[in-house]
Length: 280
Image 1 (spheres, rainbow, N blue to C red):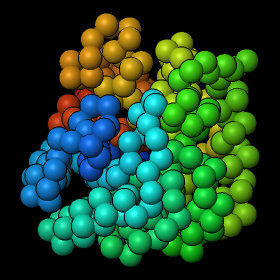
Image 2: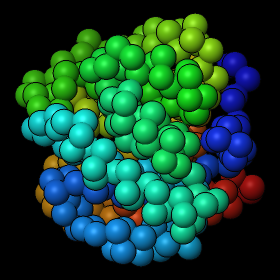
Image 3: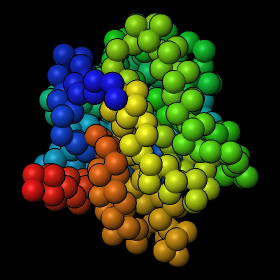
């Protein structure tokens, strides 16, 4: 196995990933699958961020465009109007917090970093904007590379793979090569649970998540309250916290270094219990 990459340089904040960390989700969208429209207004968003920080979130991931199955792309202007005031407010109130911007557009990425974000989380792997990789390189911030088959509007229609783990790994190898050629140093891999995968594909990836460690890069698991839980347990996202925590433990045992979550306290407790298990 390659030497594991265990630090991230987030605009001068050196983040140690030798132990797993939590990324709290802040959706400033009207239509996200779990919390769309829940956090209207800057004050409500700051209250949530304060809660997540107190509970142990290292990163706050801000999304201005829903990527739930069936979602449509929105204009960059609309996305910017949602995320920039939020980033500025968080950066002013909680300057030590690492803000990640969840976007597929180079302009949104650039203006978000200028406003105070210091990480880019891209579900599209540069597919929608051919300037995104070059922009990430120029901004010199960490980049979350995610696998998605198809696009949000149609990705869950009939996803097919001969071998989901092998195909996602091949995708990562190719894209990491592109990013490295642009001298992008800090890359995080997200296999994209729920993005163009069936329930079976998702569990195959989770069961063998350690396979992706071959690239020596930190793994991010985005499982929180997703349909891979709800379909198996026959519940809705609001009842999926217990299932989320159960799968978070599996992800940690399989090498995940960042848990991207709606519920920070529970994810943090899961990490503490995993750490205790590792020490025995």
